[in-house]
Length: 407
Ligand code: PLP
Image 1 (cartoon, rainbow, N blue to C red):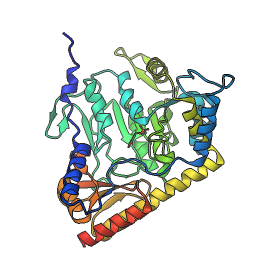
Image 2: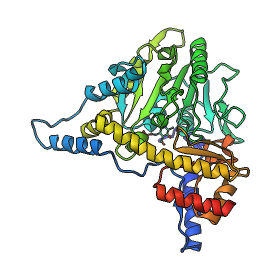
Image 3: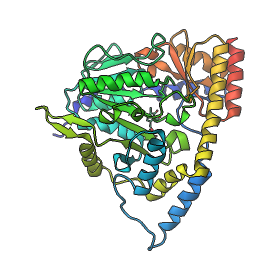
Image 4: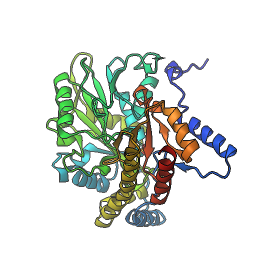
């Protein structure tokens, strides 16, 4: 008989977005005349930059001609894109990353979910709470946790992000092997300073741990004092992997292109303490299980780095950040403590009540949909996430309705 991987049975069904959809549908059915504005899901709403579209079209046309057609490309990505990434996103910021340390992929979701495959099942893993759920679930699937009980998986070390630590978790007291960090954070929108990230890098160096740093929202950073990459920290090249994505800067959520950076200097160890290069392991995994991102998509991504592309991306993000500022100002003026929304498209609001209750309140009184924080972990039970991904008109309307309803 064909048997299953029983770790899958430990997974908690994610009812979050289906619950939200059900409650929304129920409300709409009972109130067909009411308009609902969705500020729940973290998907972008604006079209791709023109520079990307033009490069995309041109590359598609190349596929129609035998002399310029391309079949399988390099699994790790075409050199033109890897070189542009290394030069613009890292070397320009003083981070010593070379093109062959960049692995182009079809999403940071896949990369952050797949990376754990390289490690033993008995390592100790530290995961933030609240958290982007992929980090947790991919480790549950691989058998690195016990069962779910009282809102948490046994065996994981949870890094709590709360008002007390300004949503940047403290270094754990115990020794951990693998550390997931995400800044600017989803869902809280919090950012980490250079000093805070340096502490994590120093910890990882002292403990021979590895940091998986998710920087999917890096392009929202506006505060010049904040680091954009973990490789701006001293010694990070030896202990950190970084994930980036074109989803939230250039609107590639449906187009799919991202990348992981795995420096050649990162060492990992076997059970006898022998060193291995993480780069070689990931290269082996990537080339075995992945066959590259479509050429036209990589061309579109390369255009992000053109002068025109950079300006368009800046404008796109500025639009979402203008929305975010309005959300944060409105909620703060109403007396709610907020984090995020300054260097991030998400605003994490202290609801002062159960997160689902607040969700219902906003839906019924204002017709606005947010995301209950409990869906991201136990530390989110009294928070909601409001997303700035919508048109300014809708955000303005939603904030007006919330202000009228909660005054
Ligand atoms: N990492 C974080 C923290 C995210 O919030 C998301 C998407 O919402 C992703 C990764 C996924 O990015 P991609 O679209 O590249 O798969």
